[in-house]
Amino acid sequence: MECLKASIPILKVLCDETRLGILQILSKQDMNGCEILRSFECTQPTISYHMKLLVDVGLVHARKEGCAVIYSINMEIWPSIQSLLKALCSSSKQKGD
Image (tube, rainbow, N blue to C red; front, side, top):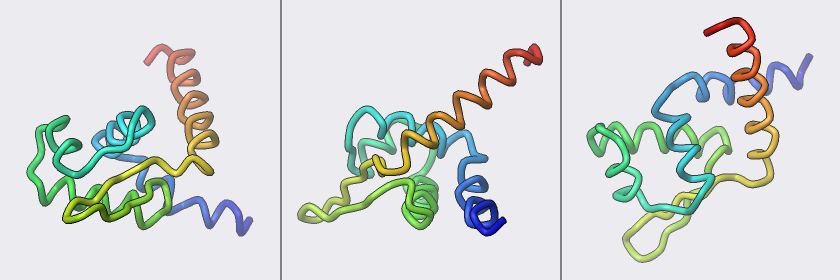
């Protein structure tokens, strides 16, 4: 039961279309905040908010390079998250959604 409780913050973060999109693009390549911002119709503070949530739950790593922050997917957890998302998509398709 403790494992399930520990998963709650991650599941809450995953319940947002923008954050799922960010994870999708970061799964392909590392990006800085400006590059991520160009991929979405959001303001910079909104992207910063989403990035903070993703970093705080450990789905994304952030590292400083000069004055830029480079974001990368946490490859230790990403395969499990990807499997979960695929299973949810598959279940949704079977129901006709």
